[in-house]
Amino acid sequence: MERRWFANAPEQFCWSIWPDEEEAVLFHQGSGDTLMLNPLGEFLLKRLQLERQTPSELMRSAADYFEIDANGELADAVHLSLLTFRSLGLVISDSL
Image 1 (cartoon, rainbow, N blue to C red):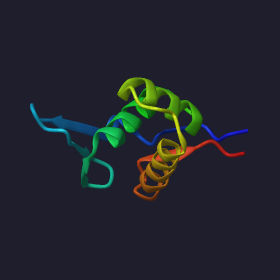
Image 2 (image 1 turned 60 degrees about the vertical axis):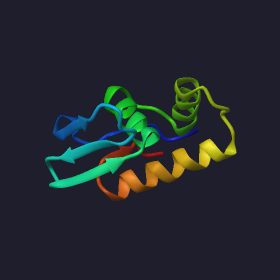
Image 3 (image 1 turned 120 degrees about the vertical axis):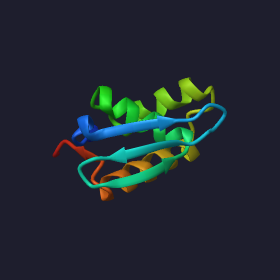
Image 4 (image 1 turned 135 degrees about the vertical axis):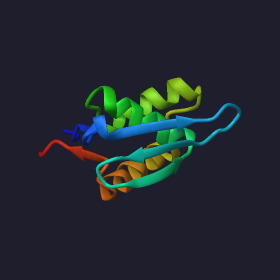
């Protein structure tokens, strides 16, 4: 059984996106950190603001959204993103 991940204090997320730019900027009010996110990172965090998701669900959603294959490379990118976001305090997971 996979853990379900979700945004930690999503009400503290402040997004900025500029026209014609790929990256999004996230200011997290709780930590005071400002992060520049690639399109995948932005997509994942915004999904996790809406609902709890497993890594497999996130991968399938990302594959559909970006119209790419749901393969091992994408699974690795989702996993690494979740670990990075967790270390920054942006996401947490259910306990198993």
